Image 1: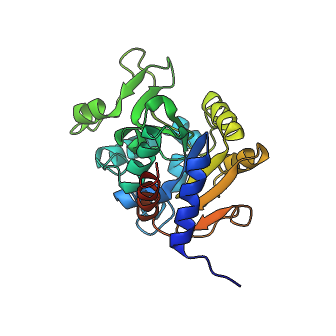
Image 2 (image 1 turned 60 degrees about the horizontal axis):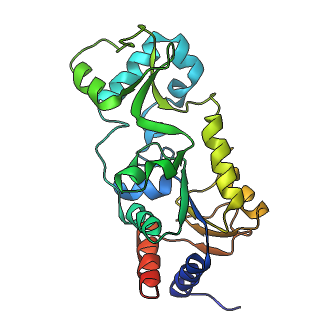
Length: 259
């Protein structure tokens, strides 16, 4: 049985991107680990340091103590460290500059695609964005950074300045549905693209992980770039088990040599 080298796979993916009209990129935690953000499930990740139950919407709503604990996590930088995009993020930005990127669909809440220069209108955040706090009473949205500075040395948990309602990080907690409008748009883009690149996702968190299936149902080719195996590997046209930053940088380099 012939073994296809990584170099050959990279060349094939570059060809697929060049030939594609609409490329959708789907990203997960594996793209951000290269920026220093631990995967929630990995050693040193969030679930090894904190109780996952504290991130259920039910406990958040019903327990002032849980809200206080979460706020201390935020103040300590457990979820909002000032991390920077890596080579994989910048490679995706290059796809946009080359006129190939239809959109980015991401499971991440770190804002790194926007930091790397991708048009925010093209980034569909299925699990929200940690840069924001949202009032559960009136819906007012506040920049997280401003509240962190204001309450850094204050034992109190901040409340909405407009209606005194509960402020919640604008991300999807366990027990919450994905933002319907965002998910619907992501599905539409996936279903109408002709190439879907999965980067840094093990495709185990649903319903976000159904995105590759929607793409394939629409006739798209599927490329998976991830350190470990995924449940979609057998259906994919190309699978590369390697660093997202290394692989994406090589793919972009290969494309630029030919266009």
